[in-house]
Length: 396
Image (cartoon, rainbow, N blue to C red; front, side, top):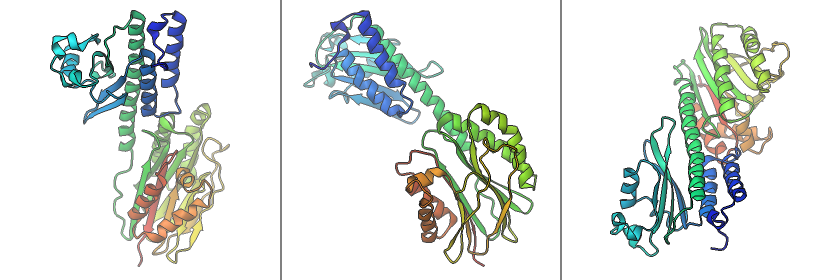
């Protein structure tokens, strides 16, 4: 294989350092998904060690996940090899499986081509429990040099770091999902539905609702950015807005939120667009503040749409914490709709995209059907978080 770059062919410290940096660069590419980074590291390891197959195996709670590179990837780590890995608490190195009694009857060894060389380095989770392995295999016998063994251990350590990061992200995603509002308590004459699909494990969008004395309050917010940082800010904003649940004055409620969040948002160089509203269920009156969001409208029963005003800057850009309250009335058959800019991006990236959302409202019957269809269509290939909220007043 002329394109393989084997560490043993050089043995130079400079080449070792260069190869190590290539792996760091590959795993450190924050703009790539974890699976993409695993894929690239697997291919890089295949070239580094000059083997026919590399496999990253991770055991999840519900199933095994594997990333394989090379023709023999499907055979790596099975039957006798699996048992040998389980029996070896540390690194397992098999120079020639055809001469090792443990593997004489292994179908993987007897195959053509079979597994002759095999190496497995354990991968642990944040608690130190072994949850997988980085494995190399080849159809010819070989012995890894000491520098190669050190580099293999480094590669496995970088993979382990990524696995632990993904474990932490999964936990964060569970926490964020738990912050989604409970199913909306029924208000006579209304249907309410909302949903959020983060572009990553966690995201910066959120929607919320809670009952008030006269009806209910609704919020849809979008934190600048994606990922864990945006999710932390979103959770903080949600909590602060909820502290004003008993305050009927929208201006003072968001003004208080601005006072609490101003310094944190400034230090994080972040801002939050938000649509926050209160519904008086008897009259259908909706009082709202739109802080730089601008992606809300009322779909009337006659299928015409009324865009709702947005005259204030987002939280984090507002200079004095003063917001303007607007109002609109939901008549029987009307729907209040708010979406995040991830929806707009999926529908062309301009306000014309709201026309597609309007079309979905026309083609669906219930609030839940509308939200489901918005997310289904907007989530296809979405690069940003996608969120939608619909409040529908039933026909008289």
